[in-house]
Image (tube, rainbow, N blue to C red):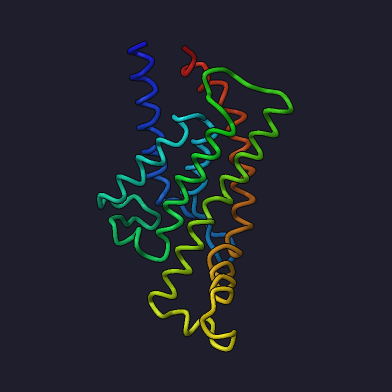
Length: 203
């Protein structure tokens, strides 16, 4: 049992390290390049499942908050969390939490149509949930910094609906094509790798 606990802790640390490392991975893809930090959070959540699934993301966010340059673009610290993208970083935890518990623990190898649907559903909604605090905080940030007076010029001033529309158009829509690709990659890699991980996680 002790060895199993050490092994699982090692997987959590490895998962967090992979998420941290992914901050430097970017692939040109149209106007908006593909960045993979959100994908690794959801991928590891689905791969490990249960409480072990979202702990790597929590550890990653804590490490970044302490100032280590592990957030996308090689930055870190509390100011990043308070900046325009801070809500998305916290959204990683929300998305990973949902995905890991919908997909379920990885102590046994699961398969079948129902589990495949759970896997796809958990990954898609996990990606979606990252955007919820992300967009809300981004909208708050542009109002707080008075950027809203510029971006909503001519659209009913600074009302919340106008700000929300701008927030979605600026921080969600350009990234959706890339997210579709990342969702497909997550499903593929989880189905390939989860049986091997289950062999280690089994009691």
